[in-house]
Image 1 (cartoon, helix red, strand yellow):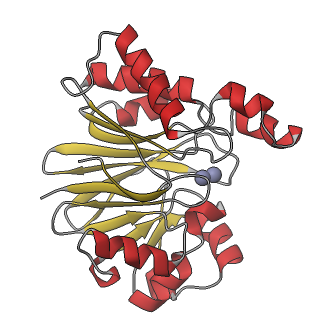
Image 2 (cartoon, rainbow, N blue to C red):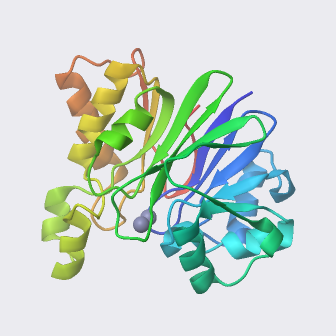
Length: 261
Ligand SMILES: [Zn+2]
Ligand SMILES: [Zn+2]
C-alpha cells in the first residue's frame, strides 16, 4: 500500500514519509533523530525500515537530524552535490558509503520508486522539490518556494497527491514581529509561498486532477492552520471546486502526522 504523510512540517522542522509499500523514503530530516524515530513509530515503522533520506536544501529546518539518522541507522542520504556539501559542512559528517549525489532535474530510482528532483527558487545553493512515481501514480513535495515556476508546474501537474507550501498570510507577515530584512527575504522570489499563492496553485492542481492536497511549512508567527485552510478553501469555492468530492484538503500540522494519502 502506498503511504504519503508528513511527520513534521513548518519553519521549526520538516520531515515527510513516502512509501510504495516496499521502499520507504524520507524527504528531509529537519528535527532530531529522537523525534523522527518517535513519529515513525506512530505510523508503524522503525528507522531501520528507511531506505533513504532525500534532501531538498540545506536550511536547518530540513537537515538538522540527517547526520544522526544516517550514522545511527545506516541510512543513505540523497542530495545534489551543492546541497550535500553545504549540509555536511553545517551538520557534520556521515559515512562516505551513505552519500549519494544526483543532478537536479534528472530522474533516478530508489527501489521501485522513480524520483524526479526539480529545481525551485529559494535562497539556498541548489534547492529542489520532488516528484515520486510508483505503481503508475505521481506524488509530490514542493515547499520552500519563492514563486511558482513553469518547471514546478510541469512536475506537479500529474500528481495524485501533493504537499505544497502555504507559508504565510501576507498581512500577518507585514504587520508581524519579524525584522524588515527577514520580511523582505520571505516575500522575495527566493523566499516562501504565501497562502494566496498556495491557494491558486492548489486550485490549478485540482483542475489537472490532483485528488489530495496538504498545505504545509506554515510559519509559526505569520500564519495559523485556520487562516491557511480558509485561503485555499475560499479559492476552491470561487473555482467551483468542492472539498471532499473533488479533492481532499488538509493542513499539515507542525508536529503530528498528516496522511496525504
Ligand atoms: Zn524550510
Ligand atoms: Zn528553506
